[in-house]
Length: 315
Length: 305
Image 1 (cartoon, rainbow over the protein chains, first blue to last red):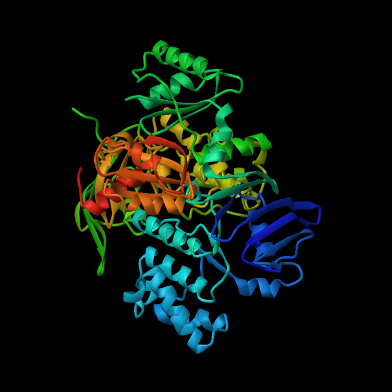
Image 2: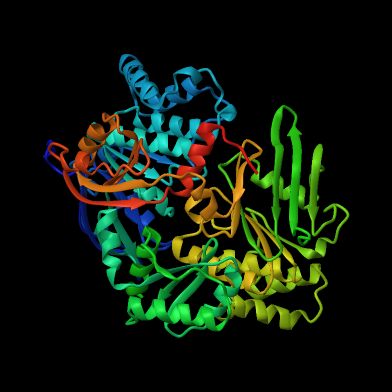
């Protein structure tokens, strides 16, 4: 029974096999109403298979998933009515005007005239498209198109909204505005489920789950996931000659990885090498090579560092 | 005297009918550096690269590659990876390299091919058909193909778009090695976190350069410290902080807030300690991100070299 307290998405031991290949392997997680949740993973990790199951497009082999209280295996069509979906490649009609796109989606969702007007007014005011209703979509900037795609996905008042790399390539001002809007939407009780390769988008989420080779390898808040990297030593070297600094460090045995990073080098110490030892060895190597550089410093991990570490652990 | 830039646009102007693509864009890529052209879709990044390739004649200003007009210069000196670089799907990885090598009349092509397969860690996949390779491997193979004629300058148009984080990190490792070998690289990206990896970068928007410098200098140009506040419930904390006259801006990020104090150096300690109904887990002072700088430049209309 769906109720105010039931989770928006509840996934238990969800599994999907294609012949001998297990694309999704006993994945379990829950997201709440009002929560912005992200599913992250490299290509081939099972993300899109998971989403296709959650959207009622693909039947699970075993395990269960309920979306907005509805079982995806037994009532896939009801699931489709309760969710909204927006992607970078969202199908907007470029030759049509903004309001015509909205009308078209309303018709696809079977909204009646009076309800359509009410929902359109709500979606247009949320996404601030009021002054563009008569514009042709082809003439809109990326940021406006993104907001129209979101408005179309929200017309039928879905309880759960799926966003697939929603802000790739848009102006940073627009991106901030977009996530402020998503935050308002979540605050009003909608569950937001995001998938992305771009970890700066993931930073806007309340909780993240990471999948690799079909299995869920970690989940938590962005801050708690970064804290999991406490065992890894990351270093930052700033230098006017970053290429020379990299050359000096690239064969250093105490480092597992060293790459150019802005005006300097970012490095990761080999497993078992402590922070003090790594800092001292890096400083020594730079001095020995005669590379002018500021003293190396420990660096805070980014979500990308966390992601890569978990994928490495997974093998 | 400074060295001749590897690639340079100065006051470049170009319009396609009523659409202005380049509106005085200027930047210079120094020899041996990784330079990022950073801006949203439609900001003129791809047009800038096409002008530097000599494919689009400018209507004003100048484009130069290694000091020469790109339309007249040595095209063999340049490698170009477009956003939609096409490999031949039904040729194997090594046949693709051989094909592009033959087009460029590369001498001792087999040795060159093997070096590039080793460089991109694709040796094991050399006999795989290109369309059977993963997206990340295809990207590496495409990079190898653009390197086959040993260019001195590399133009990469959004090389990491659509590439997953694991392959992306590997690609950055390869670009690092190319810089180490003396290559000059100009790449475009819409992603500001990724732009941090470039030695210098130009922030571009609407065909103009908003700022051009090292990531550190760009961040230093916005002389404020943000407070990163991990707290719960985040929304309540945001509303309470946004109402304070001591706070200029509050930006929610998942489980935390970025808070910009109105007065420089104000750590808001007493305010954060007394937010009613909010548990503050940690407060950390942080530099503004490149995204913060970009937004600030756009809002303040601050343009500059």
